[in-house]
Image (cartoon, rainbow, N blue to C red; front, side, top):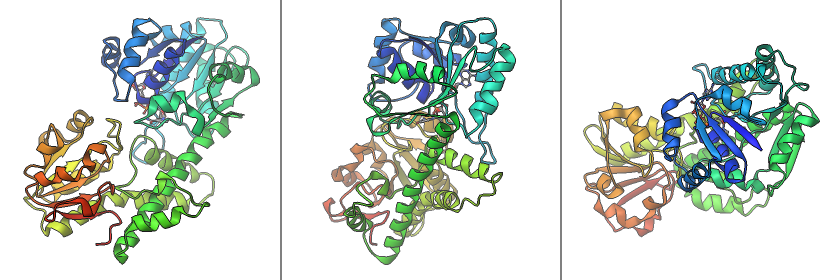
Length: 438
Ligand code: NAD
């Protein structure tokens, strides 16, 4: 099939575009960012994801993956157009729809000049009603065509996790695939793309598909805040939360799930902004969203627990050299959007600390945020050499070697992800962690 992905240099767009190209479709990845399009043409991924470089180079070489800035031209070329542009938070927590609006306008203008039937698939996370009340009417207005007659419309939420994006998109057995369809004809076209995937496919009205994505993200975010609150209570009581977690997981109604892990709080481009957007929408519905508010409230404060623990361990932060291990919001990605490390570093700087940071993939993105207000190390060993204390913020596997911490000048380790065994250190290391008993 001929497919166009609008927003094709972003985390979701590039993943979708490269994976569909690898599956035998011809895919145009279009974006308004010329610099990122040129980068892709040169075979250099615009995001970090495992195995992406090889797949990008292979699909470029076979001319089945075509990066371009010509959005309208690429839409005309396609039978299916995926909209994967960003839907970030505005300052008031509501969804910023400007990218969705811009993409819909370009699609509308392209459709005006072409009479072929094609299906527009909204993959961006949008609140219920957005596809039918904004995307569809914008395309209709600018094309002079009618949805459900001249072109089809679907909403197909994306459930991939950064850090394992390609695998999640190609093998969605654990998440399933949700096709929100305007009508059967639209849904059939999208179904055709997914029919060979090994996953349950749910076909629903568009608004249901939109809501499924928010309900899932709110549910998972709530689990993380619950785990963090339990860990904070345990720490106050002098109980190790990991022992409690083990006891909780024995109950099959709770089960073993990584969302019981306590840590520095959730970040990234999805959970915080999606919970905020849903919360903001409830104001119009007469619903008091106490769970959503509490989920965000716990999460907003959680990064500062790590600062407090550092303070308690050092006595005084002013003038101390503190190393941050891990900057991305989770391992396996270079994404720093709403990463807990940002709050932690700002807070440490405000208290007068000198901050040295290391991350295997996210240092370039960190430079855009902090510039030369902090120092950056080329390795975890280098980062730790002169440290009075270190704070593990992201659970990259290389930080879980206890011998790494023998190189520290000072000996305070604040484990924000509980990846270290406190008993594995040489005797002079002082260990503290989220939900640890002292
Ligand atoms: P992103 O910011 O990485 O990418 C968006 C891209 O769209 C950018 O490259 C931008 O330049 C481009 N763009 C904006 N307006 C455009 C236009 N008019 N025409 C062409 N390109 C345009 O965002 P992302 O993280 O990939 O997220 C995209 C959507 O997917 C969001 O709604 C997000 O909530 C959702 N989502 C993200 C993830 C994730 O893990 N990142 C997972 C599931 C769903």
